[in-house]
Structures are given as structure tokens and as C-alpha cells.
Image (cartoon, helix red, strand yellow):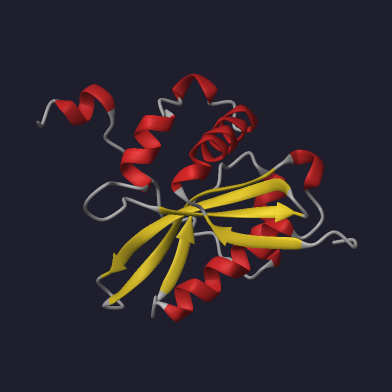
Length: 162
């Protein structure tokens, strides 16, 4: 990065509008905006509940005072390692701020957090057409797991088992 200071901090309930804006920007980039059902109310209830455990955590990156990106993640578990893991659900850096080390700083921040928490691994998914992201992740040492396919139950397919 240039002389502008990069900072990363945990999100707070007051950041929910910014988190939602980043989610929408990510969905636009991934051509998935029509699928976004997140609202400020839903995010506040799941990330910053009045009682109970948050469903996920979020960190925000700033270039100086300008919001630059975010990473949203949660704990998972590896039975083979018998250790917790960290699953990165979303990583996004504003297009005009890419190439300045912000994405790398977010990933390094989470990798350090995973190590501090005793995690055996950190995982995430990447769209198969997103070659710039794939190359970026591989440049950091990430391995693609070609033998695994993601399966998902959602909407009516999930609701039928209610």
C-alpha cells in the first residue's frame, strides 16, 4: 500500500449498514444480487444478537478512514484433525482499492486468528470462474480441493424437512 494507513478491526453492531453494503457489492460482483435476502435487521440479529452466540464474526478493513473491505467468517470443525477450523464465508475488497494488499491483509489477519484459536485449518470457497481470486489465493499457499464438490440444501428443499 501507499502512504495510506491500512487498519483492520472487528465489526460492531453500528457497522451493520456497512456490512450489508459490502455484501451487496460482493453479490453484484458475483452476479448474485437477486439472491441476497440479507437485511440490516437480519444481520443485526445473527451477528450481534441480544442474547446467545453470534452465528458469525466480521472484520472490516479501512484504507485511512475509507471503508475498503470485509471478511465474514465462522467456526467449523474437523473430525479428522479433532480441531476447530475457521471458515471464511465472504471476503470482499472494493474494486477501486484492489491491488493494494488489503485482501492479503484480511486473509493474514484471519489466519493469525485461526492460529490463536487453535484451528487446524482455514477454508473457503471460490467461484470457478473467478480466476483472479483463484490465482490470488494460490499465491498465498492455498490449495484447491478438486476432489470435493459443495452440496447445499436451501429454500424449499431445506424447508421440506422442517
